Image 1: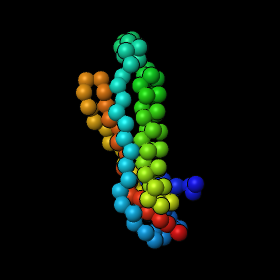
Image 2: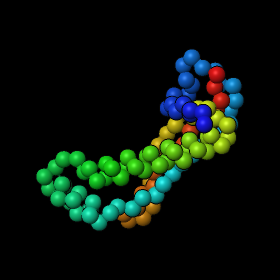
Image 3: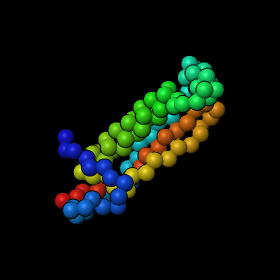
Length: 107
């Protein structure tokens, strides 16, 4: 499988876009875990990083990215440009993480 270059820029310096394949995306909806909520509540009292939530967000971001990359590969892209992340609340305790970008072929 070819490597897919990922960039939040509109172009990759030193390359030329030879083909525009369209928008690609990946998303996941995750719910908070009761144990994480309890620990987060305690952490709010003393302050500091909410590691359970950080891990949840990291896992979500990796899953979204892999889904977007798979979609780009299916289109024949070797790069995804101008990627952006978005989040939204789906219900109480559940959120969506969404990533999107433009699949292209670069040389």
